[in-house]
Length: 444
Ligand code: SDX
Image (cartoon, rainbow, N blue to C red):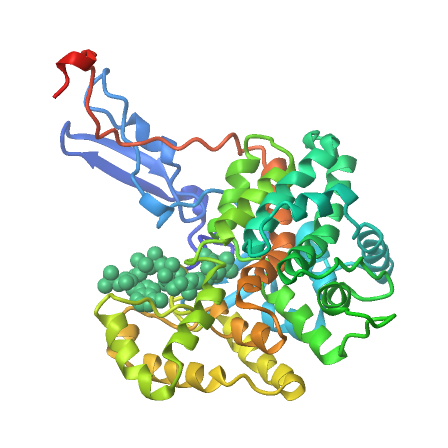
């Protein structure tokens, strides 16, 4: 089964318009011609297949949407078999090498690389919106000192919708643009405030002289120095990590943003749903679980026993496997290389050797080979974050900062897509039907 994003056949495939599927319903002997477009059939075309006039008609049943396209999108292309990832057609390898996170954010949201003037304006507008309302600090203070920063981010992103009520006017392009700038600008501030709250340290206000990644590092790590100066190598490594996490087509959290956004709620509430989905250990929470797993393994000699536990189903090899990539995640390759740049500055991470040995063993083991389980974006990212001095609970928060631009781009595309309506799937009902109410005295 191809794990490619269904494409419009533009690459010399069969001309989609003339293709059809002939379906014979063996219950009635009737035949149906169903059009195939862009490598898909429209689910609603199945409804005509009925046994009689009372019949509701056929639906498709696809738990976890393993084989269902929810939208048409021109933002990110993935070929899972070939390990290809492109943002608006640009290969991730080139963007990681030559671009910056804010330029990639512009590309994802606007569809084209910016001119220098457009990038300067975009950067300036984001830079001057990094502050959050002072009430947000008090809001943050309401959390316990040991509250998980992802939970604090989830709540504070949603809370921003109450500071900008005009954001509910999602049909107004100018108001939408203002919220987009605010979301990109304030996500690092909220993330840093959550980190400082966990540490019992005073919040550090944004420094508009610093770059996007440099300012985030300053809000995290500035202590008593008058001016925080980030190490440019660390600044660049973090910016590359944000690029690598920027978008990934219809992943769980993006689907959450699109689903919640389809009710025409404001973008802060829609992105808060994305943060919630990303928090899960099978998604953006995996990078945190990878480090916890490496800490649990502790030494190389414990790896064979751990692998046995995975095969027995007692463990998951966190950071391995992917719904789409059935090959090496291209982002994992880039992160593995970027890790060395960070280790050159910060000193190597002792768990790197365990990770490399774990990867080597897994890639040679039939259990992982037959399931096409390869390292994904989360397998190495945590090692870099830990080397940068980030606590493991901050790892999914870093993922969320990068993914904010992708969530916004996908939300915008959904808003502007005439085919999209409020997301409301159907179900197969398996429960009881039409029962008489049982008075309390008669219940056993
Ligand atoms: C991200 O969708 C995206 O694009 C996500 C993401 C993005 O940028 O948005 O790429 C970011 O979320 C990366 C994935 C991070 N998660 C992890 O690393 C957690 C560990 N991996 C998995 O739990 C799993 O691989 C998923 C969730 C990523 C994918 O799961 P699928 O596609 O639903 O596959 P599955 O769970 O049905 O597994 C298929 C088989 C099963 O074996 P059998 O039951 O057939 O015997 O592979 C096994 C699974 O048990 N399997 C694993 C495994 N992942 C799958 N076995 C051990 N270790 C694993 N990591």
